[in-house]
Length: 189
Image 1: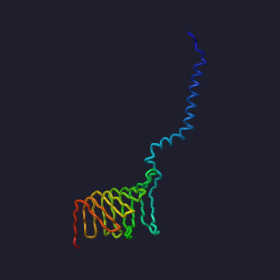
Image 2: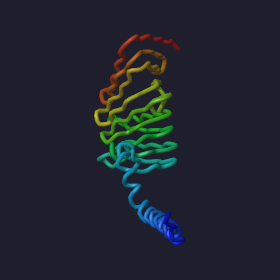
Image 3: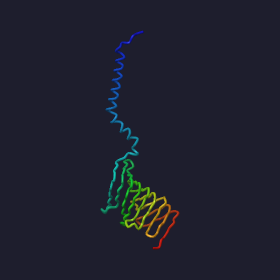
């Protein structure tokens, strides 16, 4: 049998260690540059553009007067879909007839077409609280001044209390249509 020189195993060990060191150096230098791009390619659909805690904002109309204001516990804006989600939003919307409507809910979202969707303990009331609407989900299309819900709603207007399933409202014409299972109560003061 032929005997190996003693330096060969030592050289193999040193070459292996040099290879590991080169690999670690490469990973250290280039991992941070390539990894985030690979991660973002798969996550574009839910990429957060920005997040704000306790935001407040006002949107002005063409006449220069406030048309909508809001506050929330948190706002998250998504870049790809160009929409925002809110936690515990409070909105104040001025209708075309200058009636001021207040709303609050547990969650909300607003898309680029000014369609506001509220969910979870939704309460909408006019400034004087003469009209109140309660439901679990409400869709408000600001451009068309229309609100809708397919869920049970409770509408309270001064001495009238009306329950229904589903509602369509056109605030520009001050018209509310209750869709199904409508029950009403009128209390004479």
